[in-house]
Amino acid sequence: MPTLATDIDALARFGRALADPIRCRLLLALREAPAYPSDLAEGLGISRTRLSNHLACLRDCGLVVAVPDGRRTRYELADARLGHALDDLRSAVLAVETGRACVDTEEKGCC
Image (cartoon, rainbow, N blue to C red):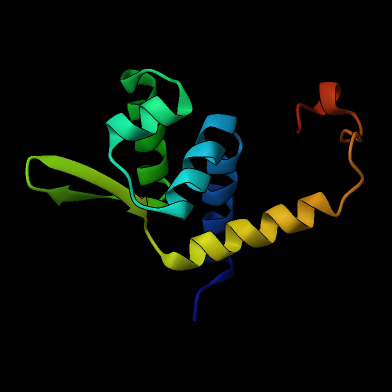
């Protein structure tokens, strides 16, 4: 049975990944289908270097895996349940009032 520390660590990694809009876009793209870095960079309109840094973060968080495919490397979600979790988070956030920011956003640095 996972310990509370393990649960907190897993949620913190997920939060770290979602804290950046580009990483969110990457996760949503990989939720649709596995992809190669060149295709991801083109689809997101970012440089390969910038993409590489974000993919490294997502790998370090344990959310994506790099799968060798001949001379290329394909990226995919580490677990199919992550796609379902992203769907659940999106629907939960959309249920919150739109146009409303977190309280004390600038002071506390949240959201």
